[in-house]
Image 1 (cartoon, helix red, strand yellow):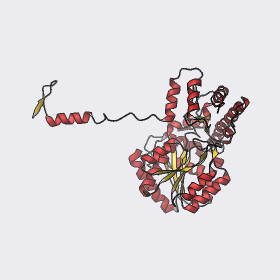
Image 2 (spheres, one colour; image 1 turned 90 degrees about the horizontal axis):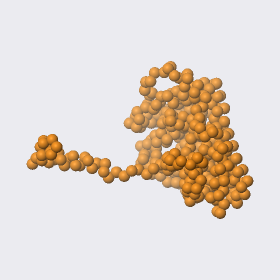
Image 3 (cartoon, helix red, strand yellow; image 1 turned 45 degrees about the horizontal axis):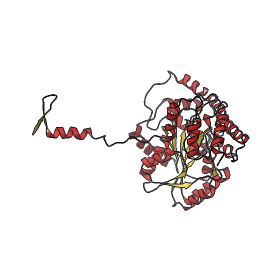
Image 4 (cartoon, rainbow, N blue to C red; image 1 turned 120 degrees about the vertical axis):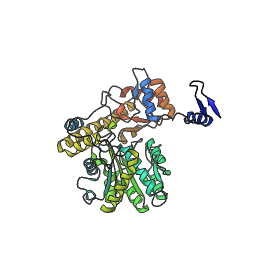
Length: 424
């Protein structure tokens, strides 16, 4: 039976009307996604009209004037690149030059593993993309395994392995009473995990706590992980940015290499080269031999193909130009140390300001921690007071992005923190 369309006068079959109704409801049941807790902080900060507002929520470097920074080594690399390259697709595995420079940075200039071609490596969409590629690789080739993730960790780690369909478990890492490492709990959880489990480790400048194991603790962790036959996967988002020395920041990786592990590694150039928006990074897996590395790389490329086909060009050219030129690399090493030293200096200044105000609380954890973030120990309610009363914005877990502090606002922030914590 046909139905007359009142607007066009045309007759429609009943099935067409039903189909139209069905299609119009395809998206009706979809609710808005919850806001990202970190990006939501920035939105609230931008909407605040207070002249005293301070954003210590987002992990992006700012100079002492609160301004974003483009490194001079990056500007010079861009000048050299401009007009000198075609805009053709990169291979699925990305820029070979950028990948090789990334491997040297992480594994060492004279690494035997690079020389023996034992590392399967591909360019990735920064550290997030490298983690996501590995999670898909784990799910495809080790579908009956799970990933052990530290408590706490960068929130997006959970999203990455969840969306890849990999079951997650947690292991103890942070000890709130000392604002430091729960080493005993960490070792106990590694010991009790089923043999052959996957463990996600932060190579340096743990996010969000800023708490890193000591060199001796890393050696004990490596030894136990090897004894249990676990697979260590490192997320290294801050090499060079943590201490100002890329070699020092790669120490955990080198310890595991010395102990004979096969391992995985995600690298990012967002923080240490300021290439946040370029989304450039590297995923590498150390294999038993060259033949195995060739096979593993081919599978990583196969996974990348339906995800994004091939990675972007510009950021890879910047990284390979900076790291591949001795003078530009020297300039980068100087600039990344300047960034790291400013962050370290802000830690000292914040702690001194809090102690000068007669705070009854201990604040040595501010300077004991390292990297972009300080895990302050403040409660969600105290963070809410900072926002509501003082227009200071951070995530509710009390994580302070030290890059948001500068000589103009650190005293104000210290006053506010003292006010909301003095009755604790």
